[in-house]
Length: 184
Image (cartoon, rainbow, N blue to C red; front, side, top):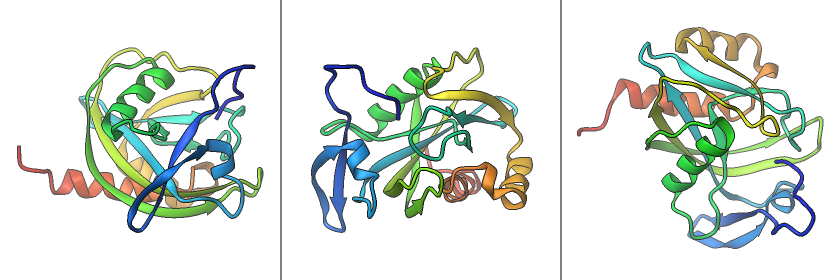
């Protein structure tokens, strides 16, 4: 999350419990310990060769900064459909316009030892296909790389500290969707 400009509206997340949507609250407040459970999404972009686009989160982010993660991750705005939010953020963070489709979800909690902030999210995973130029927003992304999925799986196991804590869970959802594609 980047600093907001003076006078700009605060970014909000959609808060939830086991029964559904509760309301909304400011994003940073939801990430302060002990954390408030909220909606999120993770997007994987795959190229023609089946490689996945990774981003290294900006050093300017509030939490899990400078770690490698899926192509894009963020939160829907109150009232915004998840797929619209995923498409919007892929464009805002990476300069990419492409369609994405949902493939599953998972819940998790993670604490960032560097910032002290936490994640308590129901994360919806989306997949899109893309071959073309990437124009990352430097406030969001420090670097991008196209990576073979098998190589990524090994790296996540061998060097987990280089990656965001949600990436292994999101990868499991991605692998399951690739192993068991939905009927057209």
